[in-house]
Image (tube, rainbow over all chains, first blue to last red; front, side):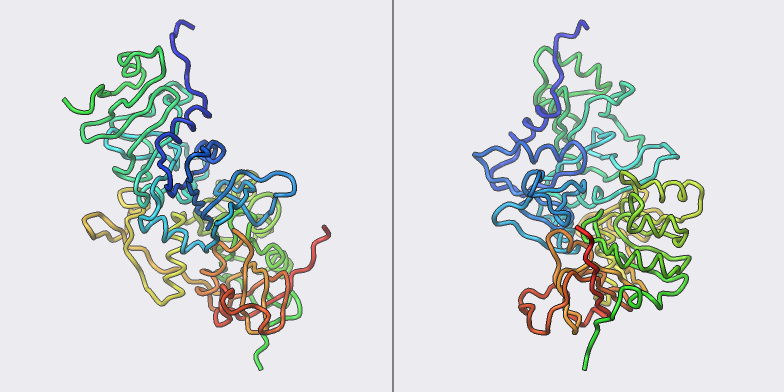
Amino acid sequence: MSTGYTRRSITQIAQRIVQDIPDGAYVNLGIGQPMIIANHLPDDKEIIIQSENGILGMGPVASGDEIDPELVNAGKQNVTLLKGGAIFHHGDSFGMIRGGHIDICVLGAFQVSATGDLANWRTLDRDAIPGVGGAMDLAKGAKRVFVMMEHLSKSGESKLVQHCTYPLTGVKVVDMVYTDLATLQVTPRGFFVVDRVDGLSHAELESLSNIKLWETQDD
Amino acid sequence: MINKIVPSLAEAVADIPDGAKVMVSGFGGAGLPTQLLDALVEQGAKNLTIISNNAGSGGVGIAKLVLAGQVRKVICSFPRQPGSSAFDTLFRSGAIELELVPQGTLAERIRAAGAGIGAFFTPTGAGTEMAVGKESRILDGEEQILEHALRADYALVKADLGDRWGNLTYRRSGRNFGPLMATAARCTIAQVREIVPLGDIDPEQVITPGIYVQRVALAERSPA
């Protein structure tokens, strides 16, 4: 390996995302990688996690005697409830999501376009069983949408694209993208690189991404 | 005198006919009325349309109905789950029809049916495959699509406490779709952990008022 940089681990991506979540924020975590963020919440901020299945104030994953089959997160893992937590039905939960009350939603993605389109619910594999869950509601309803994903697909293609080729989850919905290589902001002229891993040049990142990336906010 | 308590789970589901549209509460296993579903498998009604968030996993709950060949169509948001092979196999072979609905739209369609609302506009799904064939309008400056109310003949819900008037409470995130589905079906059947005398449930704590519930059946205690 001649690369002079090290990718961020999933934990490191989660830690990077947490830096951008302000104290007091109401946050929804999508299934898959984003759920890891719940295990990395800092002590110096009060961040309230909403789970689409009717929980505010969701705590970390449950273990041992804490396990209650009636208390699960969006990924159906057994979780805990914090003091001050609240339970409500699905209509209220998605009213909360669709009504614009969630400050930040963190979702996984197959592709994000330069205009903030999100594709994360199905691929073009005809044999796969499609499932959309709450992704379309969250993508449209949350005040800000963060994407947490690998920069490249398993076959090495950039997941940052000019136009999504996979079916869309939402149009112009993504605000920020956090990957194992960089942090990017979706701006009116395209992706702006907020930061990138040490040892990776802007030119290398742009080449891997196969799309124009901006080094400055505006010029 | 009103007495919605039925003597057994079997009697609670006895009249569900072939071809019925049946809502089933639950999010994965949380809030899933497993014992009512077992009774429905025993009862044997066929060509059912199941409206639920998921399509079952393992060999229990909705998966058991699917495996028994009783399900013609599933309306849900997320059929794909670890162990959902029963549904996967029949879906791929074309034996089961799937109507995929975004989860919030599913909840809202059910709520609309229960509240006498025929249809509503929502931005969820605008510009995606979900919008194909649906009327759309620009409202509040953004594209929104028309979604219709979703009703059912029966709703099977899992609740915690129930009384003879049909008042229900739920436990933790097991609440999920139960209170919505109870409002949207012609006949709502609740599987409860405990039946209590009228007045034992604090009126402030009633989550589903009895007006929405037709039958209450006591769940059998599972062997630890």
